[in-house]
Length: 384
Ligand code: NDP
Image (cartoon, rainbow, N blue to C red):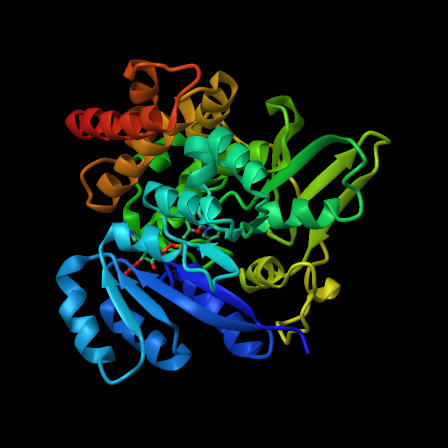
């Protein structure tokens, strides 16, 4: 029998983290949990620790340390607190693979630490590549670390490329559901509230990515993520709206042939593919039935109404620290929208303003990215 793969889950209490634990629970002969981390959801972290018995748990919110420590005291589980502990614990020798599933810029440092320690990465945290894709992919190359995509679109591209790595890609199409506001105009969007934006038609996800999906920023972040993951030029990446979310993305080769990966929209599939790579593990996930989907449809993305997608393409084309600015401004914008401090369309205004005003750096260092993120957050918060 193969040795079980030892997994660290960063962000185990989130949407991706909990679904990854579903996958691990269903495959006890394949995986064992070494590390679990959360930000503030101590109750769920404790519950997960009691079920999966990891070596170590980390609660980033230090005020919850004693609570978690006391609850796990009778068990042989190490407990640490603070963000620094998250970046330290990923380096534990016994870990084979780190699932990077913290949301936002907060996931960058721990993912870099895991790559530095030579751990294989299952990458859900797309912001890592948006912010510092050049440095992260270069580091992964030096360290011999593979970045296995968890995002369903990128998993689709990765699966379409299996056996084709020597064949040049002409183009990729990332599919987008269009979110809850597909087809709506600016008048409508002006008045939408967070409760409407948080209702995604096809996917159940964390709050930040759900808002990003409604505003099309998620697709913009994915475009930049794809550039780095697959070493593509900006003009090789296109977005096509596909409301049914059955085709998860498409690769077009230089002979004109297109390969698409399809299946029901369920994040457990790409999570399992990344954790289990190169094997496809048997699953009892619901199977796709063609007769339930007699029409798969496709539309042009409306980048005039959903300006975030256009802004993301602009930032990618500009390069340097522009995607880092885009990401930080967007994180502030989404948080403000979720607190009813700004309207839905004002999120794009804020991102655009930051892209125009923050100092551009053509070849940023890691320190430059950290500074850009900090400065953008400061400027964006002042603009609200
Ligand atoms: P959630 O908000 O559901 O979960 C985020 C996780 O990160 C939680 O465990 C949270 O802990 C933890 N966390 C949040 N902030 C911090 C912090 N500052 N320090 C340490 N831990 C923190 O997000 P999702 O699971 O939806 O998304 C995670 C990532 O995966 C994102 O980058 C997203 O873009 C990407 N992704 C998600 C998909 C999905 O279907 N959900 C699909 C494709 C990609 P706590 O619960 O304690 O707050």
